[in-house]
Image (cartoon, rainbow, N blue to C red; front, top):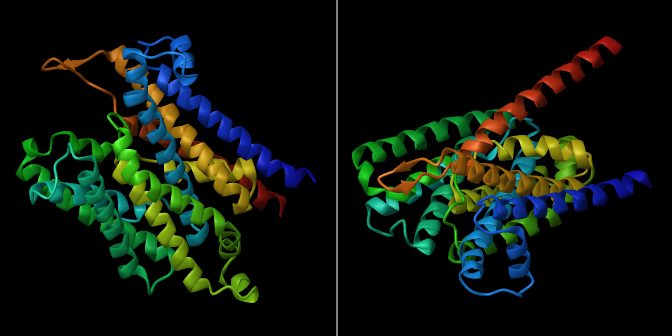
Amino acid sequence: MRRRVRGPVVAAALAAAAALCALANVLAYGDIPAGVVADVLAGERSGQQAQIMWTLRFPQAATALLVGAALGVAGLVLQLVLRNPLAAPELTGVNPGAVLGLLLALVLGLTDAASAAGALTAALVGGLAGGALTWLLAREHDSAQLVVYGLLCSALLTGLTTMLLAYQPSRFGNALRWLVGSVEGRTWDHLAVAGPWIAVALGCVWLGSAALGVLGAGDDHAAALGLPAARARGVALAGAVALAAGAVALAGAVAFVGLVVPHLARAAAGSDPRFGVPAAAALGAAAVTGADALAQLGSRWLAAEVDGQRLGLPTGVVTAVLGAAALVLVVRRGGRGAAMERTAT
């Protein structure tokens, strides 16, 4: 009974933590008191402060929640399906593909960085194309080689992106934020484009979470249960790529969330993907919103300005620093666990 209760309780607790991180994200700017935020949420206050909250702060917090959930679940799916603890959206070609797609659209005059629908659509198409390229190259190989091909595709797409940036660096403006990842400046218009895509992909992955558990146990186990492993793996990978592409299109290449969060989700909710998927979504949401809150606090402390404009610390910088530290702890813990098992045997 305890195991049955553990997963839902942990997932609910993590969802509450994500909500608290979103609130901290809103309060991190320091210019609007917590009481005013509560009044705005309750609909008891209007005016300039309420307008700032509804047009700037709330959509940014919602973006962080959605992006974190998408990256956390995408990473969990990749690690389960590929049976590789180091699999992550960064290794699928999606991240550099999305950035390259956006920059190409800008160069060709198909959109501009100020257009929410145009910029996000270009990034989404580029991300899906990057993931498809990796899949086409590695479809006849095993999961370990798929990760290698993902690295190669990512390196190729990153090189093409660097060439574009070197060719006309002044033309891209705010599009450069996609390189490091940031939720700053996201509005309801951006969420209206990418939000439904991510929400549908999250729902589809959760509905197929039972099959994910079977795939994670291996192809022989899947065949014994009558599950077509190759087809199910392709569908699961497509779902992970769709989630990663939507997240990158919305906030850029936010690093390490899809790599570290799945390990934390399994530690918290167990190995059953039916509980692991919502746990990864909640933990990912909490990670990105918390990182963005730290980024806002860091920006206030640094208070740096260039040409009269305040410099904001990108969310992706914080996730990269904290994610790298968390990954070191995960690897060291895994190494100690393996050593203890060898000693016991």
